[in-house]
Amino acid sequence: MMNERMTWADSTRGIAIILVVIGHVISNLSSSGLLEIRQYEIVKQIIYSFHMPLFFFVSGYLLAIKENEGAYSRIYILNRFITIGIPYVIFSFMYWFCKFIFSGAVNNPVQITDLMLIFISPIGEYWFLYTLLILNIIRAVIYRMDIQATMCMVVGLVLVLVCQ
Image (cartoon, rainbow, N blue to C red; front, side):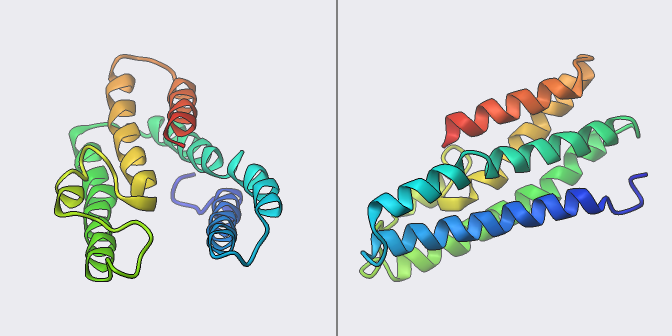
């Protein structure tokens, strides 16, 4: 089953990605004064109430399927570091570098310490990759302790709500 694409999962993630883009565009329009605050708050509340928990729910569901295929070995954890951790570091550096170079033209300039602390405090929008990596590692540990996959989804949703 995992060799076949799950179109509902791809479609759900695609919708959530579109909502992320819409949320960021509306946020930037609001901060630039081109959109009234009241209008932004209504749309923001609707979009932000479910789009990131939706990502984590789908990720947790797909993890539960992988669980049945013998996942969560050391190779699995190493693979998560490669597929999530390396992009997190690369994109965090690129984001930091652009903000550092253009620090006079951005609302929230960055410092060198921001880059040095990316493993403790994610930079910008890359908190999602950071959180997903941490949840994958936590899930691997939980799985070895024989706790159900649904517990991971619940933990993920709680962490999303706390991180926002």
